[in-house]
Amino acid sequence: MAFLQQGSGLSALADPDPLPKAPLLERYLLQDPLPTAVFLVIAAVVGWWWLQRLAKPRPAAILAAACVLAAGGVLLLAKLVVTEREALVARCTELVSDVIQTRAGEVGPVLRSDVTANIRLLRTEYRRDDILTMVTNDEGRRRGMTDANLKWVTATLDGPNVARTQCRIQVQFMDTWMPTTWMLHWTRDNPQSPWVVRLIDAQQIGFTPPQ
Image (cartoon, rainbow, N blue to C red; front, side, top):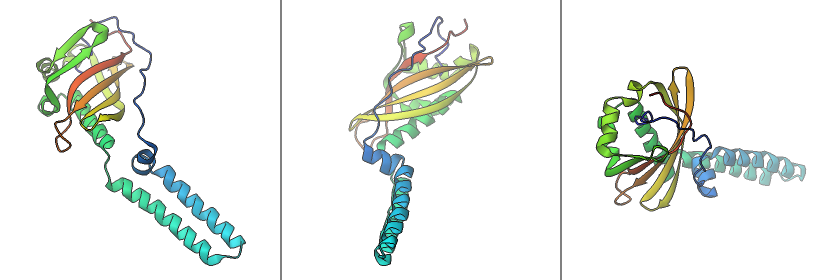
């Protein structure tokens, strides 16, 4: 991120606690339906085989068809339905990409007017104008960062209009890749409004930036 290189002596190497996982039904029906679909296909095969052994071909065919159709339905449902967590992951991914690519014009609308970036390890806090200025000036690369990429993003909902995303960003200085982990706190006025960031919290910065 643009403000990683504003200090020195950082060594917060321990991984922060992960965000809570989605409820089981949401996780295995909408977010990651493949295990459920595979289970249903296996159930179709086993059920068909067992009922055939009992000389019940018609129930065997009905059960197998029902399980296969259910597996297809689960995959289709997951493709058609975008959960709030998935929407947040997509929005956070886009924001990080815009920061890395120094697209300040795209970053601005995603930041609330009173947003702050809290670098607790440096006892430093940045306001919205500071963040946008550093993105515009490509502050990271000016201070030695040669590349950065997003490794993963997770999301959780703390309320109807309050949420958090946690992301791991790998930052490269010269030939060394170093881990950083960030918590972004999101809010919105109502369920129809877009999510915006109100707080950026550096949870882990496992390196010593150059002066």
